Image (tube, rainbow, N blue to C red):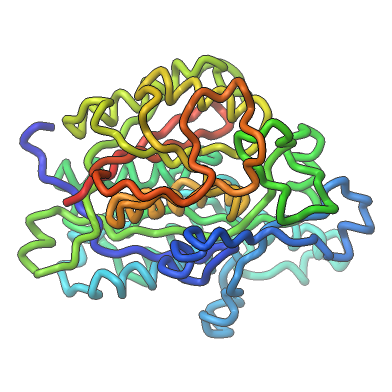
Length: 409
């Protein structure tokens, strides 16, 4: 790919548990704001769920979308559209040949709320109560389709599904397709919203979720010796990725460059990461090679770090193996909770802005670093004026590994 065009970021958008927009989310990360709160839905009591905490959106989509739009979209699709519109406006809403515009939006679970809700209606009231738009609202490509229809993207609409790596993988595929000349601009990222008793019960049965119900603000604690699992969040993150020549020709604002991407698979276990980080390290190595960088060039890693006992140690091993001890590491899920398929895209935005601003947001709730974690984890915000390149890594059930390298333009 040596003769392939550079890919730059010209727009960002997000809706998360700590902010209704990308700038609000970034500022909240720097302020150390935590979006975790008590789960007070009646069904939590009804099913006696062991988990009574979650990270809901700071701004509900109904406050941004019209009533008609919201009614025709699953909540996962709603958040995707909210973030995509923000990113596109931030990019200047450029006029272009729509054959040269693509959309790549990933999700880990998709329209679970529609699927489960409509099944309840079917069982209680029969087929006539099932919504006409049930299938387009529940399908995993629904968020990508909603964004593609709104943007009138004719260059291609794609929907990678790779569990919690989906948002990062969407950015990786958009990067590749721009480099290959499939389109000049892509709206890409991830979306997820599945706060429902069934997903929570499933994760709980795996003992993957925190049960620190009496301390919501302190429940998500990546790398901490007392971590006990992730907190379920919801949200979306989108970037406008663009051929650098095309962006400069139209005078676009440029945040930075998506310089390299890498993907691999552990081929180890359906849910557990390979403990030494061999597979994930291969993804990072690929991303560095495509970016033309050495591991010593990487000054920061925004870690996947979900706050699970096994996962955080495996990721520390990955970073040490593929990059070394020198980068400043942070885990922003300590504030947002785990947004599943949206996580990689939102954390990609945070990585990009860390490079732009030369500051790494601190990892919250890290009171005592696990002695098995050998990386340099920032507890407070840390200024890194020399920061020019950073890695965001994402992992998903099934062994999916995705690494993104962001640099200054």
